Image 1 (cartoon, one colour):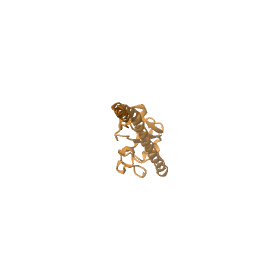
Image 2 (cartoon, rainbow, N blue to C red):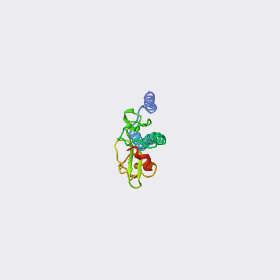
Image 3 (cartoon, rainbow, N blue to C red):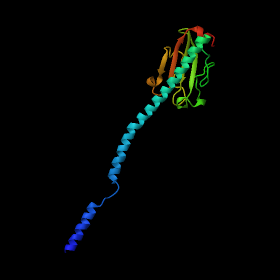
Image 4 (cartoon, one colour):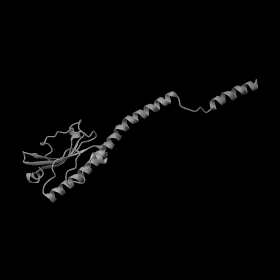
Length: 178
């Protein structure tokens, strides 16, 4: 009888002390739910950070282009003529095209020099065409009279363009470029 009791006691203690490996289904479901919740929070924040970086890089490149345009105007007395999108204005070296793969999102820049009637002169601006490489902003010469950056993403949720305007220029520096 003693040996049977000892055997039962040993088997019971062995089963209680046995170290089972692995997770239960409930533990796995809870872990997967937590990971899912954290990813829904982290992924949009990561994408927003990457976007900020790319648009910051575009602002740096546009600033370089602005300085070159101002130096060109100081040296020659006028701004380069308007060129079509992703083409380098004559005499400007800082302009990056899509072929270089150095532009953020492998997008395009557009240099514009438009004559305006009110006020008489021209608007000189550089447009970064954003993630999709297509223009969503208005091509109206009435916009962006004030110099500086104009981020159309704030005004229009469908637009991802970034514009750097040199503002309205007097007619003299524009007339030779046309």
